[in-house]
Amino acid sequence: MLFLHELLNAYTNSYTTSETPFSAFCLTVRHSYQDAGDENSFCLDDTFVRVWFAFTQRQCLDSGMQCPTCGSSPDIVIADGVSLGTHVSKLTKSISPPTSVDERTIPQKDICTTVNKISDATVTHIPNILPDMSKIDAQYPELSSFICLYCSNGTNSPYYRTYRDLIQQIAAPDIVLQLIPVAAIEPLQQLREQGNPPNWLQSICPAFGAVINAHVNGQCPIPNDIRNIAGWLAARADDVYTRLAQHEPSPMLQPTSEPWEKIGICYGLPEIRK
Figure 1 (cartoon, rainbow, N blue to C red):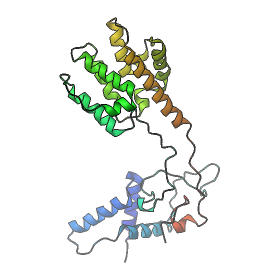
Figure 2 (cartoon, one colour; figure 1 turned 30 degrees about the vertical axis):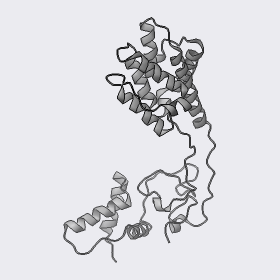
Figure 3 (cartoon, rainbow, N blue to C red; figure 1 turned 90 degrees about the vertical axis):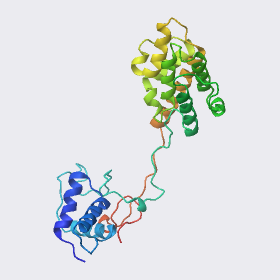
Figure 4 (tube, rainbow, N blue to C red; figure 1 turned 180 degrees about the horizontal axis):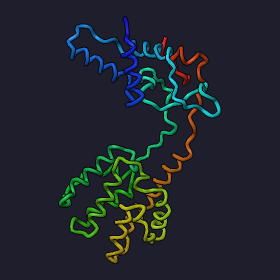
């Protein structure tokens, strides 16, 4: 089996300019074969990978970038590239993120689904029968009480829109710190304990600040259900932020003693080239 230098150089040019993975490049070449009506087929991806690495060992590929401490050839290189990354079939269970904190406001997908169903069912009016809220009652009583307040006021309430927006934000599949940034934790705790949040709360927490401003503008006291939901959101955001900022580091893997040119990887994982 022969490989033209033009083909191998074509992949080098592709991945250095557009981050082209091996599989995508090989698929493109196969399509070229089909377009040309060639009866032959292009080689397997693994074969092309081995040939390309062997080819690059004969070349001088130098970007001029080097570590000021280790020089141009450090013993260990850590990269996040997608072009020459380890194939998913070569990964092991030792590869894991440094933290497994669930960052959403409500981690349970089924409860989020229920909250969204309630939101969808109350767009134009409050129906007599709502989706089952038993799980919300059991696990998030503050949220359950707030939803009941939202439904009891009806769609004609001056607070309907702001309540609804906050409920939708709570059920969104986003990190809780997007809804409640770190700077909003203390003001929400103050609201829970004293009932008087600062006027600038809406600037850092728009969804909750809009609820507070609606009551302030209407000269209506803030209900206890809203104070309770403020305390719950503040506690949830504080918990996620603390665990994200102070998680235990992942264990260090000892790299293999074999040269990376031989095994194709330098992360202590099984070799990917024989």
